[in-house]
Length: 266
Image 1 (tube, rainbow, N blue to C red):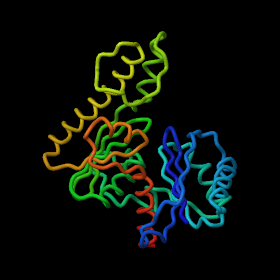
Image 2 (image 1 turned 90 degrees about the vertical axis):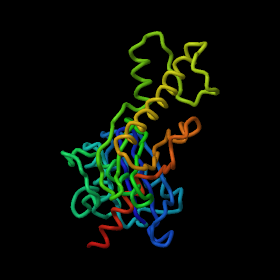
Image 3 (image 1 turned 180 degrees about the horizontal axis):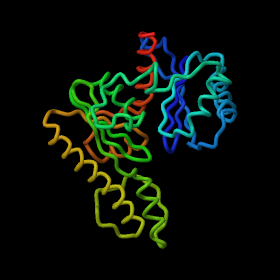
């Protein structure tokens, strides 16, 4: 079993991958999510993971390899302790030897490309042909262009919808905190404060996505497939025809591919 760990700014995803499943391509057997907190120690991660493994009828000894992708440098040490001390394997770090990115990062400063975005590029190019736009809904919402050869060509970083809503509520004393959800209808003139906030945040975000993707399409100048990933992708899919595909585990899929390629080249 491979434990693939994707440490983002808001959440850390732990995915247990059966490498022998699906004809050797690997299949996710279980996935768990916890809030990202750089203060969590390797010991705390170990207790948490051990308990969740037990619920699946498994133990630490069933994990034979670990690969980590992180955009939170302070979390890396303690995740490494989890792997080396409690699982008994030295983890592979995505983007570092011997698992350098197997994708061309065709931008002026490739070292600044987030690990999750590079992993997304690898997984998307393996699954889809032609030019791609990947929209990843996280703390930030990112829009990435992967060209037909699989090269990462750049993209856009926008505030995530929850971050935008938090900023609005924090800056306006009389605005209530609301949950992000799809409006019940397509009306854009709200009758209550809560309705007006939801319309502004939700439909404003849809308009931003559609507008940015339209501009990206014109700049690319070739047919493009739009892939969405991240927890809010399904929420928006109900109200826009922007997405050609939704792949919830895109980043984890990229980490699995990276691990498998590292083993073939070892």
